[in-house]
Every structure is written in C-alpha cells, then in structure tokens.
Picture (cartoon, rainbow, N blue to C red):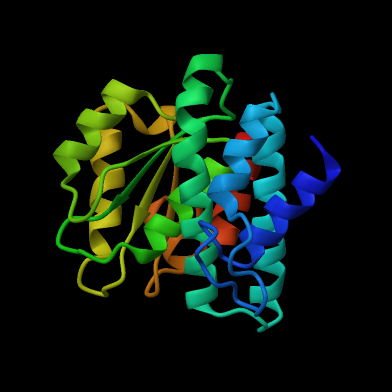
Amino acid sequence: MSEGLFEKLKENVLQGRMEKEDEGIEEGYEGQPGVKELTEEALEKGISTADILEAINEGMLSVGEKFEKGEYFIPDMLAASEAVGAAMEVLEPQMIKEKEQSKGKVIMATVEGDIHDIGKNLVTIMLKGAGYQVKDLGTSVSSDRIIEEVEKEKPQVVGFSALLDTTMAEMGKNIEALKEKGLRDDVKVIIGGAPTSDPFAEKIGADGYGKDAFAAVELVKKLLA
C-alpha cells in the first residue's frame, strides 16, 4: 500500500473520522478525507483488501493502546469503531468478489433477556477489521436461535455478551445447549460484559473472557492460532 495512504488510514481510524465532514478527536481534520473516502481511494488504486485491513487494524491497535493508558475513553473507542464500520461497508463487497480468505468465522450475540449491545458491536466491528467473518445475531438471542445459527454457519467461535447480573446466567445455559446438541467440541466460546470475569468463564465452561473489545479480539486470535 502507498505509505502515505496507509498512514492516513491509520490516523483517521485513530481520530474516529468516517467521512471528510467529520471532526476528529483532535482539531484540524475537518474537510480532509475520512476512513470511508480513504478506503474507496485505496480500492481505486488497486490496493488489496488485505493491505487495507492491515492499516485499519493497526489504527485500532493504537486506539487500544491509548485506551489502556487512559488517554482514550469509551466515546473515543466508539468513534474509532464506527469509522472502521464505515470502511468495512466499503470493503465487504470487494472481499466477497475477491473471495478473500477470512481468518475464521465468529458468531456474536447478546444473550436472551438482555438488550445491551455497545460492547458486542465494538467486538463485532473490530473482529471484522482484523479479518474475521462475523455474523451478529443482535440482542436478546435465545438458545434455540444460537443453536440454529451454529448448525447453519459452522463458526469456529461463538461470543456471548451480557451487561446484567440477571442475564449472565444465560451464557451457561447456552453452553449447555451446545453440549446437548453435540456442538460444543466444534466451537470455542468466549464471553464478555460488565458482570462477567475469568472465574465466571471458567465456572460455566467457556473458553475465555474478554474484559473489553481489544482483549476479546486478542482472545479470538489466540484461540484460533
């Protein structure tokens, strides 16, 4: 990829800028091409989707570093993730056309009874940006629906999200449902959300816990390595 374009993509992910009309987290960016326009430009120049995804992923890694240092907060992460989402809307048709080999297939769902989805959406966008094929089932997803989708899509990883103490128990029920259908050995199960933890993941038989979106992406990479 053109080095200048590569750096602009990373920088605009870091600034959370989808389009040229958007302001950045810092001042002085309005009017310059955003992530969407830069992605379109890269494709027009014949740059591969793999190289574009690499630039986007590096941008999100920088966002993660700033978040860990306390320099970025949840709204900054959301802005960066929305910028990545805009890039993925441009890239996905080309990836299908190229039949780009994904790093793996992931199903994401907020468990039944829970309608919170910010964390799940962040993980979904970041996994796509890292080169994974992701199907997001949405919120308040029943065990039956999860089983149906796992049988149909045959993912390598299933991710469950919950924000409430009252709904996190559904994660264990979903794992038991996978066992009953003979599907548990075929998929890795990850969990996340405010009330969850490593001990809880171990208790219900999940394969891992992501304390935030960045940790969840790294967990998927580790489980599929």
